[in-house]
Amino acid sequence: MINVSDLKKDFPIFEREINGKRLTYLDSGATSQKPSAVINEMSNVYTNMNANVHRGTYVLSSETTTKYEDVRNKLKDFINAYSSDEIIFTKGCTEGFNFLANSICKELSAGDEIILSEIEHHANIIPWQMVAEKYNLKINYINITKSFDLDLDHFESLLNSKTKVVSIVGESNMSGMLPDIQKMNSLVKEKTDAIYIVDGAQLVPHRKIDVQELGIDFICVSGHKMLGPTGIGVVWGRKELLEKLDPVYGGGDMIEEVFYDSATWAPVPHKFEAGTPPYVEAIGLGAAVDYLSSLNMKNVEKHSDDLRIYAKNKLENIKGLNVVHTNSKVAGCTFAMSVNGVHATDISLMLDTFGVAVRAGHHCVQPFHRKLNLDATFRATGYIYNDEEDFDILSDAIEESIKILT
Image 1 (cartoon, one colour):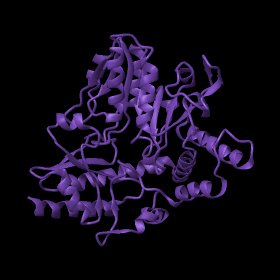
Image 2: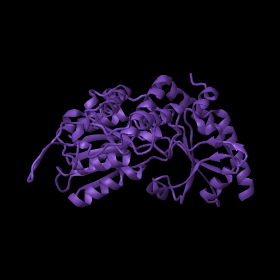
Image 3: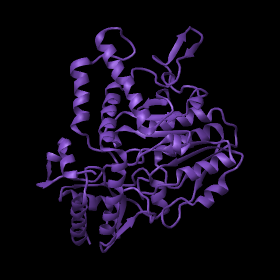
Image 4: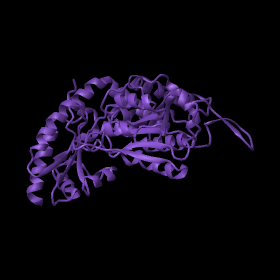
């Protein structure tokens, strides 16, 4: 089990006070805090072995290259990939979706269809919109039910012979909704020859993920949401599919041979990683994976579930507070909230006076906010370093803020 009071000692930022109060950080949906293990590992690279990877035969380059490539093995084990060659480093989920959209869709035909959902993050909407316009493709959106879950009957009705890509959030960054990935994947494989992609930005940091068991084709992962640094992410994909895709970015390190009039590509995974990679950030992500693995992701998952149940009960009993959260028994510990007549930014600013950090805005899911007739919400997300006391502080601060602002 996770002992939050002990675990917080691993995170230097929790020594800070905000406005004279201890920091209550509830914005892990935007970015997670970093343990000393990650900070120290990155500092160690810059201090003791910094050299470009894949480019030198000298000791420093060899050491850094070994550390960098070993992170693929750590991630392979973390999500149970078939091979470490299936781990593609990116700058984050946004770059991952842009890479997949541009590489996959160039082979599609006019009129082919892409399925997304009404609750997708902009990173899983905009790249598909851009390629849809470029290649004359059609995007269909799965409806969301009144309880903020995916309407699977509607999803099934959208599947047809023209469906070529299904790209769906793994855990909603707004309502905490967790779709039935395996059931959806079964429907996709049964009715179409489409590629099934999961947005794992919120999912992978909080739950034990086995890509082989899920049966999916690709998943995008964001490093900074799972204790790692910014500027690093991962696309995992089945090797046989990756080998069929063309690279999107060209330059050094992704080539086999270059001539004045042509070039050939390096094998997977390097053909998708042009230029000097963010190797220090990747090594930092490796340290984050080590940290989470030491906790055991099943414990992380249980902690999230227990904290969600407690937090939901507290928040839904606050008079005047509207909570956007799924009614499903399995969900993420994320709550988007609003107060009638009060802008989310004003609530967020008030909460900051209590030392409580939450995000205000549309959380990069503006279409779903618009569907709910909401201009903005403020959002609290619990993670491994949060406990019941944090949500007690949040609840009390919300009640005080409502009294002041209404």
